Image 1: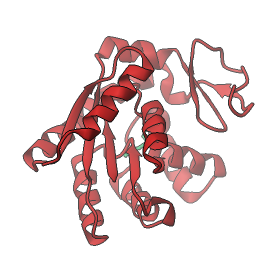
Image 2 (image 1 turned 135 degrees about the horizontal axis):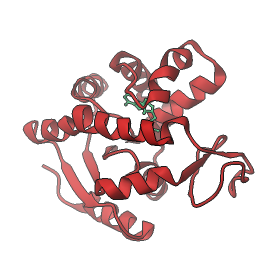
Image 3 (image 1 turned 135 degrees about the vertical axis):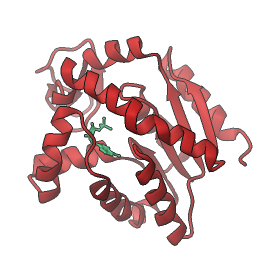
Length: 214
Ligand code: AMP
């Protein structure tokens, strides 16, 4: 199954994607994680992406589609994949569907995580992440050790207030149109309430995946 997680930054796509991936036994692939690793490793791709990421702007579609091609043709994604943080523009959505068609595959479902904007600001402002395994935490100070891997918890540059505001603006301008696109193309889009307890959100997501497809 190819599942695309949609929703604004801070909607919980990463956390829920991890949980859904575990339940379905397929990998979760986050372009944000791939890009952050490239920045850390100082690759050419990372160097090109860093300035966009720090500002909370989107990295060019061509870079993202290059990553997607590599990832989707890898053996790890043979049984399927959960795509977190991609697609974020209509050209990415079109590029991904074309690429999948060439591989004889398709996006089975889009899951849209719905969270009100004031809640997103609160969530993103209080977030720290492990600089090693990327696990997000709320209410912990930067410098604390990660409970999972012992890594260092840091505030992402793009979780600073200015960048957060920009990321939400970018979402409205460039990513929200993808939702309309999925409707026009009669794709399987399920909107789920992503507020409240983590377990409840996971259950809502799993239930949406059981709904009939078009
Ligand atoms: P994320 O961890 O998903 O919030 O992504 C962090 C940053 O990586 C974003 O703010 C963008 O700069 C970049 N990024 C990740 N995925 C994409 C994408 N699909 N398209 C463009 N930029 C992306």
